[in-house]
Length: 395
Ligand SMILES: *[C@@H]1O[C@H](CO)[C@@H](O)[C@H](O)[C@H]1NC(C)=O
Ligand SMILES: *[C@@H]1O[C@H](CO)[C@@H](O)[C@H](O)[C@H]1NC(C)=O
Image (cartoon, rainbow, N blue to C red; front, side, top):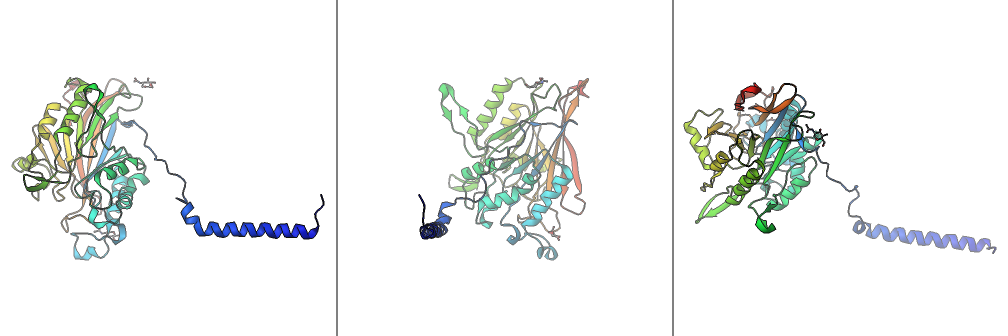
């Protein structure tokens, strides 16, 4: 069939009209069609299980109480008048980057009040910025909640869900606890989980847990018999802790891998440390719950919990020993958190070292801790041994 040139022109004009109309309609409603212009983002997971390094060490950076708000517009608290003008959340970010550069940790533990809910209008955005440097440096990290994280747009369950989905996070919401007959039991709080660390690659312990890290939710606030008080670690959480441990290690206390615990709010017994030779500074009252739920007894009965790392009281940064378990404050990290002018923001580092067997790395031989201040030189302070194995053949 042969078309006249007039028909061809008509057809072309007609097509142009249709295309223009479609284009016009698309431009009117496109914002409703596009959910997201970016590619779908899948979580980038760290290499799991976590492992000791080839040199037999594993280092954890504890970041306590960042109190992150909205970045540049969130001002610093309790800095000197001269510093106030040029100080914001970005100083917290800068301190985190400096700590990462200086210590190159294998894991970062964010021990709550990561964000200061009432200073942000978007909890997710604030968390992304606060945790940002860990992700930037691709360092595995674990977070738990404090008492301020949920004071914005996400509740505690949503926060832990979000934290568990962020890049390089090893955070989890809660364990699945199986009761007899296959029924699932719920445990209190959000953010109760265990992170296992395996031995050095190529060593006899490379497929075994040599270091157990327990993260616990100490809650926010509660009313007990009409009195307002802080949250605490509940019986259901302690039962989970003991059960998961007993099942695996069958109460074979000797030879079990050492463990550390991380949570936000101190337990009431931390007050008693005032009367002991603690290491570091004890400058404010211990703000804890009026409920004593048996956390210390649980740790003692487990036998392997060597130290617990807490936050909440920003100008306390000491370690003290209760019945063989060290309780260490991280010391306030964030610039939007209360602190003291001229008392530097600080962070705690924990380092575990493996013992050297005849020709291979074995289990942990030594656990140490120290702090660094956010001063010119990131001054190192109060280095101390938290635990040493009594297995003399390792020495
Ligand atoms: C905050 O950061 C700015 C610029 O990065 C710096 O000049 C200032 O001294 C910092 N303030 C404090 C209190 O560290
Ligand atoms: C650890 O597991 C890997 C993979 O299953 C295996 O090749 C290796 O021999 C194991 N190492 C030890 C020390 O058991």
